[in-house]
Image 1 (cartoon, rainbow, N blue to C red):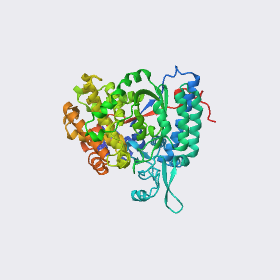
Image 2 (image 1 turned 180 degrees about the vertical axis):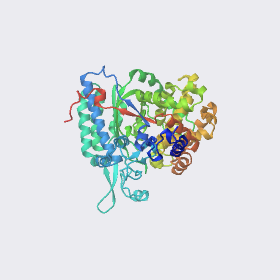
Image 3 (image 1 turned 30 degrees about the vertical axis):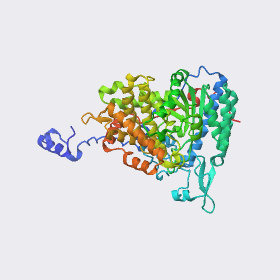
Image 4 (image 1 turned 60 degrees about the vertical axis):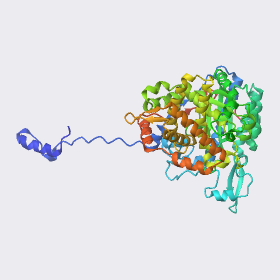
Length: 564
């Protein structure tokens, strides 16, 4: 026990001088208390939200020619990193020059800028203000009214930037002109890879995609991509998703992924494609909202991802893909659903299971399974191709009508319809009905995982809406004593149907006001939910994953040819 100095003086006086006690002024200095540990920096706390996962694969079945092709595809996708930096932040070098702390610099690199994607885009670099909702797609001083009044035929194109001329008037600049030099680099790499492909259809696609990058005419290559069935290697590259445009949801961001097909899993999934027309007809919504017929060429496949770049690599990493996004291509050909099996497994093992151990009722923990997580993710992507793409009253596409709410509504629709499709297929005997409870409980755990992404992420915002809707309908209940959540099977099924109808109706009506109202009132985290999510943080459960990736990780640096 540490003694107060006055106690020492009194003790000496009581003992008397014969005891040899020193005067108080000469008493030995007391040891100072150890300094309280420094509060972790913002960057340190934010980096702790990620767990690192190596993106590797068994390449023993690929010969030297195949590996050269893969290396070129990785290099081409890496160019998408450069392009995405320009779209989201602008001058990467200037931003990094302002940051000296290594952890803050790493956080900047993970977020492609100074805004924390997993914390509602909070700025974390001194002198950096709120993230512009239109990234660099629009002038920061442009109003929606000015945009709507501008007589520019291609202003709503996914592939144009809005800029001002010397007189301050709005003009459009096509992506292929704004990013000409970097796009030329990517095109060269794709063209070098094309003759190395042993699948002629894939080689042809690579050449077509190179042309598309240089012209912004992506539809021909999208159609060709839909026609490919036998390629064991795949690539997603170009301006794809419109999540970053939070002004209108019109402008697409560059991304890239290199994928290896898992043939065994893909064969297991192929049988579900034939059910799509029947599933569309059975959606829980009036007939006019499901009158569109999805293309018949849709297919389901499983892949191992070996490289992520650009928009695919920021914030919460995608675990499945439904493409193309072009509504015309979807109506003509359908879409392809790509399940990224290795990344999905990593998120299940390192995030979903630990969340369930903290927040799911103990007797329902056995219902948390990877197969249910895989099915939920797969049918989420299937559901993107169902429903309605064009509004019923001629307002154009759903994307155009719902503007900045289009992405979160599409993600919300896909999540809840995914569960509907699992239920419908289980009743038809195409899935094991005895495991349906696994799907429902894992669905709840997945909601709790995704709401942690925050309101800056379209998936997180959609999950907040879904969480509160299901909560209000009693689809699950929370034990006040344990703080654990339990699924009510029948009420969850009723909530699933009700929310499916609501979201599909708002999409079909192109009802911007209803989309805004639903998001504003339910797309938030309640104090109780926030406290439960804090428990996950206290338990040091990561929010998402980040990758160790690249040619070195894959062992391809020796075979990577230099671009001409």
